[in-house]
Length: 148
Image (cartoon, rainbow, N blue to C red; front, side, top):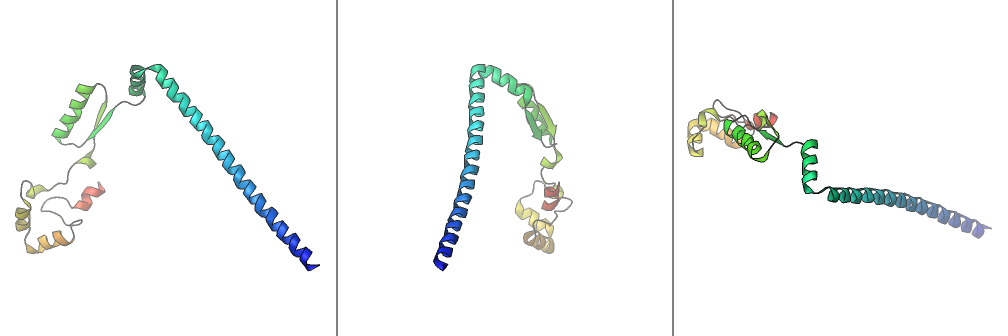
């Protein structure tokens, strides 16, 4: 009767749960197998590099990935970038305008107090309350620097 029907349903539910667990186990075993393959490949790479020796590894590294230095367009940063390659060997230096500092134009060389005094009361208040969008006289707002 009814109790045997309930037993059949419970058994079916147990079989379903067991099937789900077996699928999860199979998926995890497959993942472990793939990770073991990756580990074996990585260990072989380490052994290969060890066999090459440090000088050969460095030589190959320079061929595959030459050194790069990115500088702003300011002369001092360009000179520093050039210095790195004259002391370290081959490489590339690239000027990147987005690395240039904020253009503070008329306020260059001023102390913060002098900047606030030169802005006037309303502009100083705008600079203090909205520093991201406030623009120094003749210069850039922080949002302009971020955008470039």
